[in-house]
Structure formats: C-alpha cells, structure tokens
Length: 130
Image (cartoon, rainbow, N blue to C red; front, top):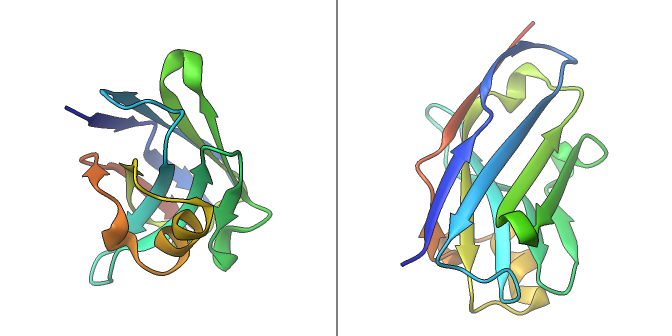
C-alpha cells in the first residue's frame, strides 16, 4: 500500500524559504511520476511541480525559478525547495504519486489534470505573510 507523509510546512514571511519533504512508502521511485500540488482556501487544487522517473521536471509558471523539486531514492523522500515565497503561495501542499504515467502524462498531470495522480498525502500547511 502506497503511503505519502508530508512535512516541513510552516509560517514564514515574504521572501523567506521553506523545504517540504514527503516520505513515500510502498512505492518504487523507479516508476511513474511524483509531484507537489497545493490548494488555497476557496480555490481548486493545482499542480506545483513534478518529477518523472526519467529525471524530467515540470513546474507551474508561477513557481518557476523559485521552487525546485528533487528526490532521494535511497531515503524514499521527495522534496520541494521553495525560495522567495510570496503571500500567494499560501496553501495546503500535497505530495502525490502515480505509477502509470509516461513523461508527457506526468507533465500533463502536474500542469493540467491533478486528478491523474493515484496516491495522495494528507498535506502540510504553508502560510506566507507580508
């Protein structure tokens, strides 16, 4: 059974940084696609960043050049380094995985259709104040 547990959220001020972590169990990093998604109050869930097993990475436009997704297969952990945070980054952040996606599908799930991801964590809250 695949389980994902996020951590690292918190309350920071604008321009500060946070690193989110997601420990993944029951899933092999040699397959599919992993990603970070977020949902702000009153808004639909959206993709933030994704990484495919072939090493390709994907980002939504609003976080490019500020956020970096990475993985440590030995530790079964997915990371999201978030720099220069802005108030509009405030949201619940979720880690998600699917073992079915090719590289193109991974990009699509992250940038267009989060419903394509099969496994989800419970989220970690990020609050960014001015």
